[in-house]
Structures are given as C-alpha cells and as structure tokens.
Length: 40
Image (cartoon, rainbow, N blue to C red; front, side, top):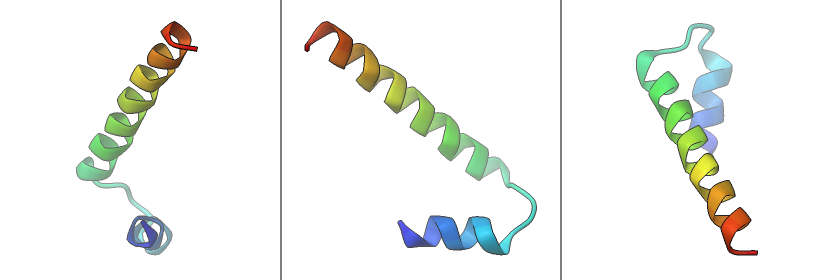
C-alpha cells in the first residue's frame, strides 16, 4: 500500500496504469455502496 503513495509522491505525471487503478477503485467503491444500500 505504501508503494502507491511513494510512486504518487515521487512522480509528477500520472501514468495510464495509475488512471486505470483509480478507475477500478471507484468502480469497486460504487458497487460496495450499492450493496450496502440494498443490504443495510
């Protein structure tokens, strides 16, 4: 987990893989929020 923040701190430009990783996190969070909404 620390490696992600190290890479983000040392690098000024974002790579394509970083954007894909963030997108995957957003999709996972959205699905989790939907699940929590239907299963309180």
